[in-house]
Length: 153
Image (cartoon, rainbow, N blue to C red; front, side, top):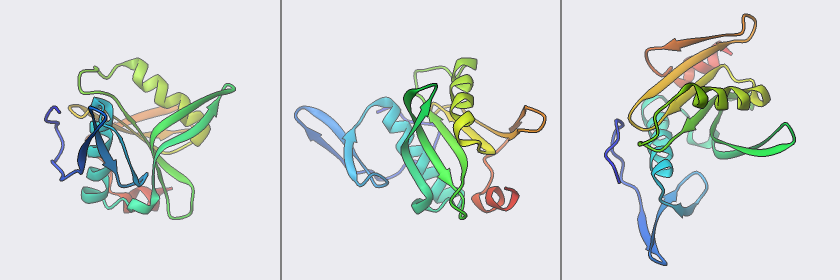
């Protein structure tokens, strides 16, 4: 898999029926090792190891219903109170982050109403806070530490 613009982690990878799988410690099972999954596994480890996000408050592939259609947010981070605080949208490293990507995560946020959005393809990372009152996004230079995220919500 491609080297990402994220720290490296020691993942459990195996071959099954000729395809590679990676162990997802959040879902507690092996999943297909696609380029997007490679990014997802790196970013969740990065959030837990570098930004104090409790692993127990991370949900990978959280289901939602939007306009009567079933969708899945790549990663949803919850606050201590049980309310979600951040959505993470992951793309394959060869997918350029575009306005369409932000529109996707913004649609998901119509359901979850989180204050923070993170979009990454493993190479480029865009982190922003949402001002619902003024319907405005503010792009931040760095990912906010979890304790600050939940302290501000």
